[in-house]
Image (spheres, rainbow, N blue to C red):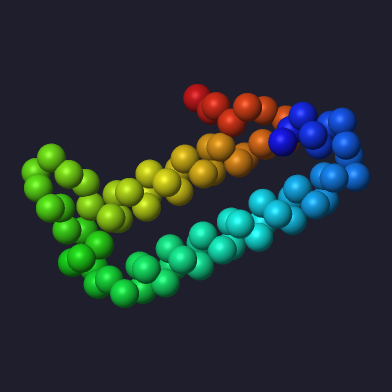
Length: 79
């Protein structure tokens, strides 16, 4: 998508709007899911080798911040 934005600047707005639309769609799904869980359920580990929902959400949050910070100018890999 970075390639398209540089070559087709008029498509930039449409691409950004589509990204926002998809983001808010999936954020709403996640928010509605988490609203159904209490703290105990969010922190429940099904086994000693698994991670809980709250850890997954924290990981995804960090990953999304890394991938989308300055995404128009970098490849998303952060140190």
